[in-house]
Picture 1 (tube, rainbow, N blue to C red):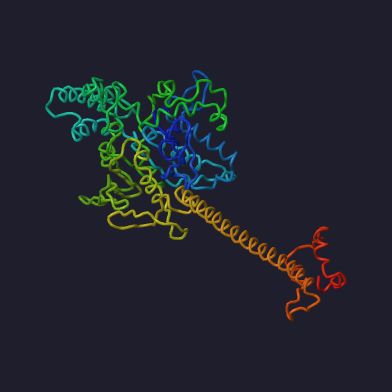
Picture 2: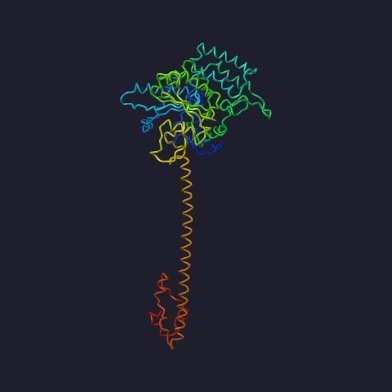
Length: 515
């Protein structure tokens, strides 16, 4: 699921982890890093009113527990329609504001399992995967300036930095006076807005631009500051509003407005004023459920520094942060993917943190195959017993389980290779059939030539025999009509001219053997 709140999960389906990406507003191409190779992937637009989902006016959701209850109802209805999936392992994944949604949904599933009747199936929740998630506001708000300094977005001691630091102090006071117990704090949101606004400038074309808050390697037009990104976004709305697409997806026509990426009516209603931040649920969840928190290192809005700080502050399963014992921290392991630095892994007591190098707020958009590698590892995929060519992925120099990204026989790359193999086989078949046809034609031509030659030879010999009948025949030169019959499929009744010609010598008319 995606974030917002109120942003459609079809962002993730068509720009990140789904089986296809959009080449333009009418062309789908295969995504080699899709997450569906070893999993069934279900994309959910929620809360209601998001994406293709719809709701009557004034029935939008307001709190995280309402959203979680709705999600459990959704899953219940889904499994009623598709009971064959209810016993499957369940992994809940998402990004950004889904960092609030996912722990609340997981908590609601655990409570449902505890209260279920004996006739109800237990849902096998095996893991949570949160990318660039908004999980713990206090350390994540305070990380805005730290990240901005580190990446050179603002200079320390400059007029801009002093202005932003002043706003940060207002934010800090608000957090200390109850703000940290809420999912968002307006004065802290202003810190991010000030960084973007006060660092905006004219580019060489004279256009006002600002940093892309989702990928600080890029700029965007002001005041969008990332809302026009990624480039695929321009194809998404026209594609998902096409009549043939909505018909193929069985979209209810009651959704009158058509698909929009982010629904303002949903986000304006979903303020979660009375909901505790989801970080408060993580310790209990981690007692039973493994969790991955991953970050792209180029994202500002939910940056990795804030995620690392929230982990350092978190206490779970008998320890704090990644400290294994006093002063002894779980190592940050270097990750190499196909021989290139891909990021960092760090794990302790059921929690894993993954930092992706050169990746944005939407990690799978930038590095889809690496994101799939992370998923395969988390699910425990080991293709040694399945077949396929494992990707060279090493953590601290160790391969670990053999994971296959796009190289397993069921993968999109394998399908492409299979198509190429079939095409090559087809052309080979065409070539072979052409050679065979040529041989057949050549053989037929030789046979026909022999037939014509022997027929003419016979005619000539019969004529000579008539002329020379009175003087005798050479021994051993007698024509056997059976030879002609072997070559011709049926007897040939000669024309009158031929009868007259063959009748030379009179006595031969009665000699069938000689004919």
